Length: 339
Image (cartoon, rainbow, N blue to C red):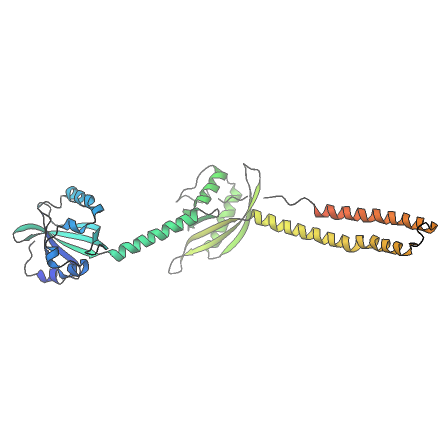
């Protein structure tokens, strides 16, 4: 290939282009787009080697690439898609360029013509996606909530660490992506059918939640989980699978039960206070009123004092009941598994 009357495709190309000599890697021709993009003048470009466009940390990789591909040999003919490389402009700013080259004769010298399409936005976008994905993965895998998704055939598409750990704990087998979610060992036919129905409900478009309780074979405890089933849609609206979230609510249910029990105890205490305690207190006040306080040795006071002792014992018994109601034992606890 030679640069002839088609030079306007080189000079007027919106992508950065240059021609370099194979034997020296010297740039021998550059177009206007490259001068504008990289900030070097034409004279500066023509005093550079193509390696000068690479950052210092990329130099070794660059020369290794040339040697491994043999692209710097005249025998290498045709198009080479070199992929995306990191360049530096005159101000030291990073430019990502997608390199395509072709052998060419220029001034009777073996050269290659290079098209360096700007890929900076593409790379930054991919890096942003990767960063977002990594952070999302970290968030999903650092939660104790169990998250998993299935396709229309009820095969695993995704599962977080919490879910893998939970299923492994109950079945002794770690679930694998692509495996059928309801065919793990250790589940009864009834459990398999139950979970298959849950998934099928979501695959018909229903979004719903359940509370599931299961017995932990190791700790001998029962745990409660709130599980939500959510249809996964394509852009066109077709359902492609199910997304599932399981949240441990054992502690929450225990707290709610404790509050209910506490409220019941408070009601009992209020009842004891307002009825059982008020009666002997009223009797005591009545007896005190009829007592001869001016002549304490009045024989009639003896009977009043005996009644006061009886009333005092009644008050003591009511106080004991109130204490018993206040310090009643709290609720017991409950775990979950899902095929």
